[in-house]
Amino acid sequence: MEHLINQHVKDIEISGIRKFSNMVSQMDDLISLTIGQPDFPTPEHIKNAGIKAIEDDFTTYTHNAGTIELRKAACHFAAEKYGVHYKPESEVIVTTGASEAIDIAFRTILTKGSEVILPGPIYPGYEPIIRMMGAIPVHVDTRQNQFRFTLKMIKPYITDKTRCIVLPYPSNPTGVSLTEDELKEIAAYLKEMDIFILADEIYSELTFGRQHQSIGCFLKEKSIIINGLSKSHSMTGWRIGFLFAPEGIAKHILKVHQYNVSCANSIAQKAAYEALTAGFNDAITMRKEYEARRDYVFEALNDMNLETVKPEGAFYFFVKIPATIPLNSFDFALDLVKETKVAVVPGSAFSKYGEGYFRLSFACSRETLELGLGRIKQYLQKWR
Ligand SMILES: Cc1ncc(COP(=O)(O)O)c(C=O)c1O
Image 1 (cartoon, rainbow, N blue to C red):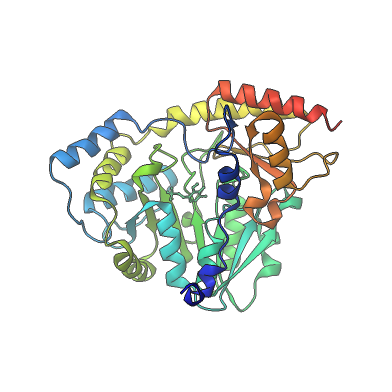
Image 2 (image 1 turned 120 degrees about the vertical axis):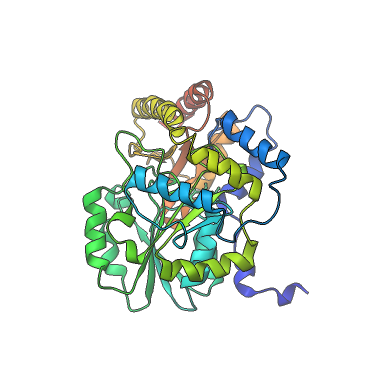
């Protein structure tokens, strides 16, 4: 029966991250710098709210969009932290992680032949969904512009078929964010155009040295803002995300969400409420630790003469493979792990414009970083 499978689904390749980690996961004593999730446990008070939800039998369906208390808390959080204003009753949907929010947004706005402009390198979670809609991902090579997806980079790719532009900032895998001026420039240009913005702001609480800026402040009427608790509150397994959009857009996305999952997990919603209220500033302690690690890793990479952009957010470095190494990023990562037992993610996992780089995560202990970086330094000697 396989010949009857939807061709768009057949064409999806498993993610390069998964492909690589499947290959190396059985290795003993592996030092993994590949991790894409926080290494902190979910804060105790949030876990307790989940336990209490079960004890209180809060185990049934909720409103499709999520409990009103959680929607109010999410809108309050977004307003206080980022200055974006959404109505809890009609402009926010609680989703099963940011992943589901990406899925239902694209399924609502894309049709066959729609073009979606995205920066490359980029998190691999968007392209398969765009393709499943019969739509076309148009990646823009940002490598020559310090990974900055500015209006100047975007403009040449806009056509009559462009339906959406993806702004995934702070960025996985580069750590880059756009400035207020860069966002304003994009917003001003798109103001009169029939183009959606999908802004994935899942790392918004993990910014270093400056406050996160949301496109929702400058172009709310065309923006779909995605966020969630996976990264900010170390809650990847709880699967809670948020989708913010003006009522006229959100009411259609809600239909897709409703027939997809009915509602987000009720127990996790109680924990999420705790996270956004009593845990309003929980991310600050974690952010400080990530920032210290970032500074440590940046110095170590500089010391090895490795070229990289200093991340302004998230917990990744995107590092250029030195010109003296005649390997593509997959073979480089494979050789590195075979010789040193240090795993990094090949840049090609983040679109073809990630080729020539590797992603190094600092969502791991300083001891692990020290050990891993020490071995990378030794490994590089062989190519001098
Ligand atoms: C940029 C980006 N968006 C979305 C996600 C998925 O988030 P969630 O776990 O909330 O589905 C990730 C996870 O790594 C990510 O890096």
